[in-house]
Amino acid sequence: MSKEREHWGSRWGFILAAMGSAVGLGNIWRFSYAMGEGGGSTFLVIYLLSVILIGFPVMMIEFAIGRRAQTDAIDAFKN
Image (cartoon, rainbow, N blue to C red; front, top):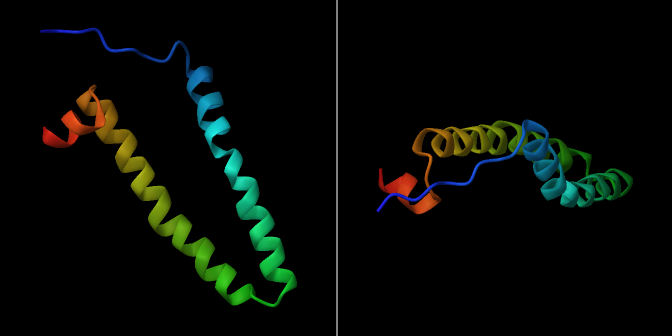
């Protein structure tokens, strides 16, 4: 049984959806400001490096798997 997958209507639609899902990043910026004010700058640097070195590559891998499989997450990882 072949069913048609949905696709983003435009590149801007995807970008705006990704930006909308990142609204919670405001909490990260508030958190970093509060940490800096409280003297936790060392933790903050380690935290941001971890996000950049671990979080970003994992996000890119997830996007690549999704593009290649063109299916839902469960079937993508089965393949």
